[in-house]
Image 1 (cartoon, rainbow, N blue to C red):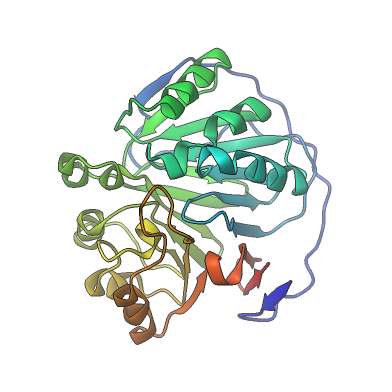
Image 2: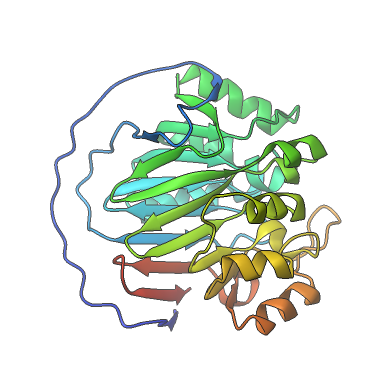
Amino acid sequence: MKKRVLQFLPKRLFALMIAAVIVFSAAGCQPGGGEKNATLTPTPSTAPAATGCEVHILAIGKADAIFITVDGKTMLIDAGYPENADTVISYLRSQSVTKLDYVILTHGDRDHVGGMPAVLREFSVGQMLISPKKEKSDQYQEMISIIQSKSIPCVSPEVGTTYELGGATFQVLAPGPKALKEGSDNDASIAIRLVYGARSFLLMGDALSTTEKELVDSSYTIRSDVLKVGHHGKSDATNKKFLKAVQPKYAAICCGETVDGEDGFPANKVIELLTDFHVTTYRTDNDGTIIFRTDGTTLTCNCD
């Protein structure tokens, strides 16, 4: 394992927790997800866990799968291609996951939704968030069928809604109306900003420059310590004005070999721009799985 320390992290304290089990059910996916800027809480998981926040960006090639744990609560964002399903499930098991408090499908592209049906079969889920743009692919329809058969609470969240995850909050920032109007799957990506103490993460899915402009022009806070770069580092995202607004110290890019005829590597233009902004950049093709850890003050990164 390669370990890159961004700032020395003190020894973390471990505490046992007993979480109350709240059972509720809902079938299918509903629009909305609560009042704008409301804070929503899912059914809690029952496993005792350590305090702190970890963001694991899995190395599964040109595909997204991000596992987040905060004070024992858990979230998965996307699940890669169908062929990545076993890897994602094995990784979650290695992290002692038995239940996912939240699952987010940023959008319906195959490299994000492909492994999701298998994940939903394997783990119980407290709350599912999906993009309002529906898809007709086999993997997407299979996912919806499983959501309904397992009565997983599911919504297409309203932009501005804030959720709780342990001691963290995350706010849904996209897709906005202009991005949805563009019509592409990538433009419809859910983007969130996760905040734990003084540290923050902006996770962009495959959001493109249309979403970036909406965020820059909005009243939402987007400045963040860590940027998960949109659309695998392609040149249709991550522009100069957006980086100037976010001011990230660190960036992570999910990338790898060409799949389905689509180049899986980031554009030189984006890498050069990140360098110009003095952003320490990690890539899953070069660095493996990228794990950020924070106690709300300090921040470290391990690359496996």
